[in-house]
Each structure stands twice: as structure tokens, then as C-alpha cells.
Amino acid sequence: MEFKHSPVLLNECIEGLNIKENGIYVDGTLGGAGHSSEIVKRLSPKGLLIGIDRDEEALKASKERLANYNNVKYVHGNHDDIIRILEENEIDSVDGILLDLGVSSYQLDERNRGFSYLGEAELDMRMDKTQRLTAKEVVNKYKEEDLANIIYEYGEERFSRKIASKICEERSKKEIQTTDELVKIIESVVPRNSKDGHPAKRTFQAIRIEVNNEIKPLYDTILNSIKVLNKNGRLCVITFHSLEDRAVKNAFVDACGKCTCPPGLPYCVCGAKSYGTIITKKPILPSEKELNENSRSKSAKLRIFERR
Image (cartoon, rainbow, N blue to C red):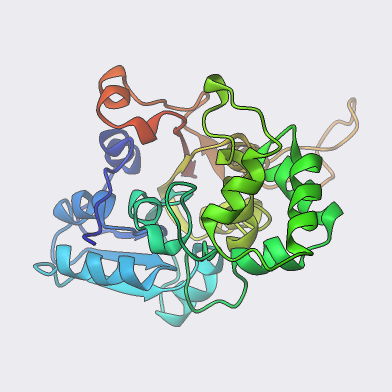
């Protein structure tokens, strides 16, 4: 299957990065190079684009799409390790970083990856196929309480306890192996409501987040990304649900230098350090035109931070 992905908030990201033609830029979620193809167009041969992705299929597709550019470095890795990745490439700091969080359109549409609740596939959901933990292990091995908590916290699913209980009941009879089997279990306890979308949507999101550890490191990833920016360098982050957005927002606020001293002190003694400023006081949302043309942009939010 061709790696297709309509880049969300593309123009807003390119404008937000404020690209310098000889600069060094990182796309920490390279995907099909939708955003990166526009970044690299604006770089001179002296500029450099570093594309990071956990998905080897994404890297392969990006190499094909950007084959005409010699100033792109491809890294199979995780944006959570951005400091280590830059050190390994002997780079101290960069001029801009883009993080387009969540799952790609290709990963959702490629049914054998197990991300989608439509159709039937092995319970996988790994962005990086080299990692050990899969959705099958989460569904079949996690304790009922842990399953319920994950589905509630990461999926914001109000029927989380019923779903977890039913999963444990069914897996005691036989291992749950496919997405279709899991969907049927969820549908048996979650009433259909057109406003909420598919009954399995929230649970699949939650399991995917757990498998790929998408939330826990995110706050630190944002702070580390800010710290490796050059002066006036920009970090652009696109989120797709409230947990991601909250982590990004909190990291941005703390990176501004949040003084925790008691009121009334003549000067700051807590050692708060400011790394820069938030460019977007409110997140940038997709235009009406983009919402009509790309349904997957519906919940997208873009936040931008500038290093000072």
C-alpha cells in the first residue's frame, strides 16, 4: 500500500517554523514526508533536514519521496530520544523542530497493522515493529484494573470498566487475537451513539497509546526539544486529543520560566529559568476549508514555542 498522508495544518506549520535556508530542522514524526517535503524545499544545499520516525515503512516511503534532496538525514528512532539522536549525529542545536503527534493516515488505513477498528487484522498497533509490546499482549495479559484505567485515561471512555471486565471474561475462554474479535467484545457492552462515533474508537485509541507509550514521555520530550533549539528557533507541535495537548501546553508554560517563589519576595530565589516564549497564546486550528477536505484534521491543534 502506498504511504499516503495529508499533512495537517501544513501552511501554518511552515509559517510557524520561520525557516532559515541554511538552518537545521528536525521532523520528529516524519511519516510520509508531507510536512518535510515542504520544509526541505525551503532549505539551501547548506541546510539540513533530520527526519525521525519509529516506522521503518514510513522512512522507506520518505526516502523515495525526498530522493532528489541530498541534505536529508533519516533516523529510525523515537522523537522522545531527540537529545541522544542529535548527539549521535554530532549536532549541538537546531533551528526548528516539528512534531505531528498520533497515528498516521497510512497506519490507520493499512489494515494489517491493527490500528483500525474497521476490518480484521492481528492485534498489533506497534508504530515500531521492532518493539516487543503489542496490542495483543495488552489485551490478553494486563490486569483488569490496569486495562480499565488505560481505557478510561487514554480513551476517555466512560464504559471502561465494563469493557475491561468483558475483555477479561472472553480472554479466559480463549486468547483474543484479532481486531474484529476485540470490536465485537466492545460492541457487546457499549451502546451505539452516533455522536460518539464507533463504539470501539476510544478503546482502540487507548490501547494504541499504551502500546506506543505516547503520553508518559511527552512532557519531557517537549522540554528537551526546546532546550536543543538555537536562539529564535521554533518548536511546532500538532496534537489530536486532550491528553497530548495538555502535556504540550504544560511544558510550554514551564519552559517560559514559571516562578514558584512565595508572593512578596523582592526577587526570585527558586531558580526558574526561561527558555523562551509561547508564540500561540491559543492553539491554531484547521480552517473550514481544511476541515472539509481532510476529516482527520478535525481535532488537530497547533502550538508554537520560540527559543530566546
